[in-house]
Image (cartoon, rainbow, N blue to C red):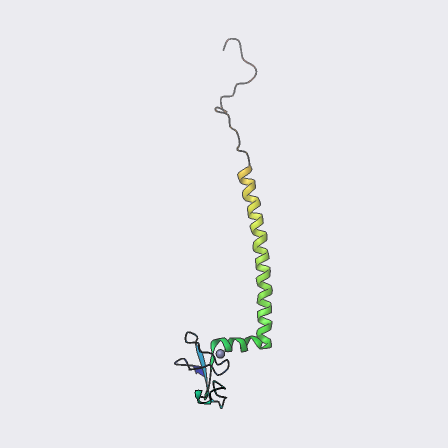
Length: 122
Ligand SMILES: [Zn+2]
């Protein structure tokens, strides 16, 4: 089995023509039906060369893949929920900081005068 060096006329699984999609050459012969049933002269597919989309579809059917994909979907859902919660928390923090009144400072706090003022100093 190897990556096909060129795009076959048809994928031996879906019979599609997909020039932009990589194909896998299984290096095995195949006595398949005519490409076009209504026209026996249309040719036959002689070699098992499948497009990447068919390979991915077949891979997704495997039980191990389904378990991995299911686990990844669960982890993605958890990560998205956590992201949303943290985003809401960040929004609350930002709103609290923006809405917080600024501390008022007097112009001259160090020279604050006490209540008692000696008469001589006045
Ligand atoms: Zn295909």
